[in-house]
Length: 362
Image 1 (cartoon, one colour):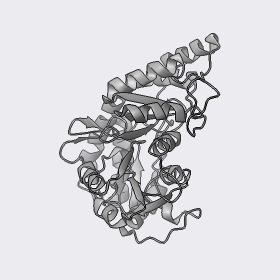
Image 2 (image 1 turned 180 degrees about the vertical axis):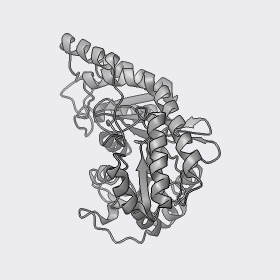
Image 3 (image 1 turned 135 degrees about the vertical axis):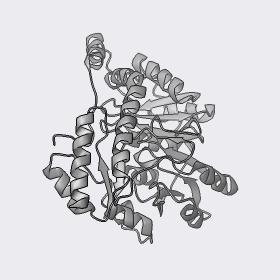
Image 4 (image 1 turned 120 degrees about the vertical axis):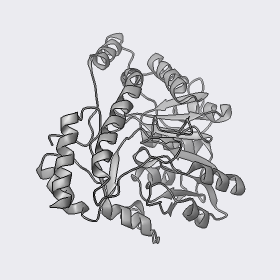
């Protein structure tokens, strides 16, 4: 594609950081607190999102797993999660032995519907996992009230929303645990990687053990854990990337504003921030009944539009759950994401707008 949907922005600084680690010969660390680059990266994360603690792990999925393990989620428990998300959200729950219970989303911003959550709560429910899809902030105030009334934990799946704020507070930091992804398609990357943030010291101590086979000093596993460690090379890349993150988000915002100003008068649902919200614009996602034909025509022009996600999790063969989720079904048939990443130029935006106008009005 001439204009891909997402592409990592890497420069000489990242290459230099990787070379430094390679020359040092210290590629990872089994120490409880991680290696030098891991610790330095965690410090930068804490400063950026204003959390007390941050634990770097080797994927966004690992971040979700570690968070759930730290809450003691286990077989027989239920965790409510939106079906309109990447399968990792549910898989992390299933990996604990618990059951993912699928809730519907809101058409306005594709995040979990608090009323649907309320209806799904049972005596087995132990937690809610809202997903800040496309970088859109979920309705956290309503979800927090449900959690308090029913004594439930909340794990924020903020994989796509690093840098998004709601009332000047970062997604991922509203409750005990928030999880980010550093996959190449996200707003910043480490190749593969993830982060768990928390303000709870007990959970932090557990997370450190969980990412390292439950060990404290070595060969002394205190609790269940896995090798979820982030390698030093990945941490070195992430250290550079997080310093660039504000600029990355600024460019995404600029591209988004240009798109919306030109597309909002077309027969499309274009994304809008709600009051108090400032998105990272991880993905610019519209909705249209002409989605499939539009996708084909955009690809023919070299525009890397993409569908996230064409199949809801509850209909994936592994889960095959019988759930009535009308907004989820609507979203899977109508959503389409357009490129707004930092390598998209003003001329690219003009070309996307021109093409979209031709398709919609043609």
